[in-house]
Amino acid sequence: MSVRRVMGVETEYGISVPGQPQANPMAASGEVVTTYARAHGLRAAHGAWDYSDEHPLVDARGFEVPRSRADLSQLTDIEDPTLANVVLANGARLYVDHAHPEYSSPEVTSPRDAVVWDRAGELVMREVVQRLAATPPGINLYKNNTDGKGSSYGTHENFLVTRRTPFERIIAGLTPFFVARQVMCGAGRVGIGQESEHAGYQISSRSDFFEAPVGLETTFKRPIINTRDEPHADPDTWRRLHVIIGDANQADVANLVKTGSTSLVLALIEADAIDRGLEVLHPVEALKVISHDPTCTATVRMRDGRDLTAVQILTEYLEMATAFVEREGSDPATDEVLAHWERILGLLANDPMDAVADIDWVAKLNLLERYRQRDGMAWGDPRLTAIDIQFSDVRPEKGIFHTLERAGRITRLTNDEEVRAAVSTPPADTRAWLRGGVVERLGQHVVSASWDSLVLRLPRAGRIARVSMLDPLAHGRDETESLLATDDVDDLVTGLGA
Image (cartoon, rainbow, N blue to C red; front, side):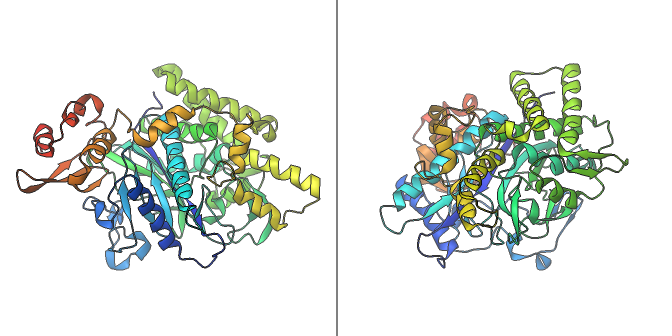
């Protein structure tokens, strides 16, 4: 069993225009995307994305919601000139998703690469903020998931899962895990309730916004298990599990454990190796109970009558994953995830504050408690809310997380050099290599692109060609590097056999 599989992380960034609280967030988000595109000679338009293979209303439970009954927020192909889209040279997508700029990382095959290319997105956003600062008032961006006033925006993970795995098994196997996972990778939040109607601090930024165990929606009636069946790959072979319940992580360890442990649990589910009864009686309520308890001692009722803490639930998953790996074999990427997963659970079981260097919500809570003790602030003090937001500012001189990391108080698994390289270089072992390479070298010929297609204008042939890329593990560096050496797009397409 391996932690390796095709995955990716997409993050909507919080946005503000200094001194203009009423500024239009869609217009500001569009400015973010177009500013980056202009600076790098990239085309940013709604039509730059190929929507022909997107099916946001197809449900993994075996039906499709009629378009006439869909909420507008569920449709991804509505023409809107403000919805800027751009494909980056690293194979990522930068675009306006509802009222936020979103960076969707390219496909990678390991949790560690997911962390690296997710951090590359932070550098993309940081560059935009720095460029816009030259024209006051500029725009500020935050890697968080709520404004604390009722709005929540997502950080989504994507994992390819074999189509032969029944979706009902995925729901059963993942729901208790997602209810508990937040203690390892929550980003922390000042305020309880969707509109912070109660004072306090909680583990996850997103948990109060979830209202259903299972469902298709992502911006309302948010479900613990999202059922969108849009694989962006061969639909006969793959499902894409679209995870909408995670927080945006800045801490490498939390981000690695978030994607890595989820991939391992999916491997258990694919192998039908979940051999323990872990059904949570009331998962939506349990999600909030766990999030509202930074001591990590709150218990939730299981179907078998046990009352377990989140750490105890996760320990059962870890034990199953460890036993499976011991039987089936492992690899370095899997060993790394298992080691951090086990270490983190040990820290949380002893004293959650022991994980201050590894988990976002613990690092933030430790900082806030110091302010509270120094200045006698109650949890309802607006200065604590301001610190919460500033914690996620992408600017290195303003973001509190970055200050802690520079001071060596946050465990770093990546390094600056590889993250900077990932801003302009695609992963070598997925189709992102071809996507990013074509944008970088032959961008003037790109009509549109998507995760599984490239639509190219061929000047010599006098036609448009659509290159299908339904296999995420095809079109990597080994297969396409020599083809990409050409500056003739007609030759490239011929070489690809399209």
